Image (cartoon, rainbow, N blue to C red; front, side, top):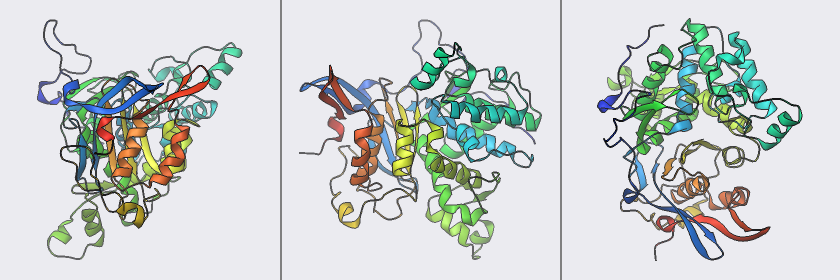
Length: 437
């Protein structure tokens, strides 16, 4: 397999690992003055914290349905880039005779809780690669699951790279390197063939050149794009599930198949009959679609526990709402509906007559054909505690999820504020998401 030539980040951004010169302003995301109040924390009737941020909602065709704040500004998506990284890995395995099963595929895109079940899957990927845990090069860490951590402490065991929430991503990256005979020791370097393929995949699906590059908490390169670009790319991944029968037979438990189809084929462009191309164009796939993306989405929907952990927010949204959900550190969240998501009934959809409280919010989408409606948001203070509430609310307001289905999940999202053992308040929507008066 050939590899793209290494290149520097776009727009004169600092290379991965670089720092701003002392005394000069650092590049960055939008300022607080450009954001809006997405959520607040209320205690005993007093608002003690306000979460300012930006968000965007895109239709399945990639059109902007609504915006809040400044979603055109670059943000570092952190783990919200994992679906793109996993997709590049799946494409890198094509033709190798080595493949990931459904659960291994999910671990490649997971921010997992470090339970014994998660760790066992990570170890199975390393076994495929013939590598030991010390090859991961991610930090030694305790499990995110308190139960798993307590069990380690009781057993007298210590932290390990296996428990780090990104270890599945790292194991899958290493497997791609092994089957392509790419260097292992330098696989986290930006110039490495794998990292160059990941960068190309991000730009391919977001439709943007990265605005800057940095080093993620796990040690891997991470790249800045806008919330609009992030939502566009995630929507393309989740919408590919609808197109899978037109591309090739895709089963989440089967080996990924590297099939990329242009939205309008030469045959269709010349007036020929091309049903698959017509369908991709109708769903807004203006460039290409991927059978690996369909595999990734189907695998996540079938194994919500693996991407996060039992009872945790992403897993709840996947299992209970069939919404592809992925958190990223520093307050980033992406959510995209699928064909299995509970869209509102016609009566409920007709009640969504008020646009969102934004300057350019469009009328809500119709309740039909809403699979692939995608939200991307950034809490400017880096706190994720209200991100799921805001994301689900935006999907409801867009007519892509039923309010009743979301209401059934909200009590399980740890939104209650306590005084001692008594509830005294809640994390709730902020001014920008309150109904207009």
